[in-house]
Length: 138
Image (tube, rainbow, N blue to C red):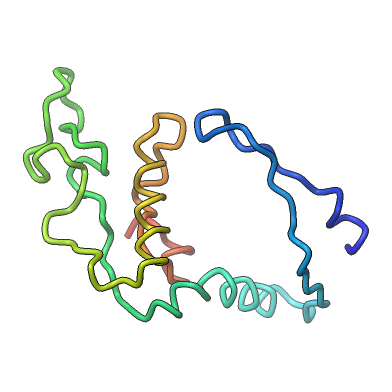
């Protein structure tokens, strides 16, 4: 694993600016306990760590009627969604209670989800919890 870290790289799509992402200098590699449940718990712990630090419950931002794109579903005329007035955001949901870093993460996910290539991100634009990762479209 330690040999893989310096050579692993991921290229970002051109829609967000082509760049190459790599691991930083601080990498903590430890063996995981055997068993699917143990591994799932370990992954869930770190996947939700930032959200737990935020400590605020934020409902999904996306309008359920239009799934966040601001247009009426199934409408061939491409008219604005009546539920969200075309914003794609669920009315009444505020990010004001989030710390700046948490708000920035959610807002960035929302903006990227507005790009056609990354459309599936908008329903995920919120601080994640384990159940959100397991069942993201509740």
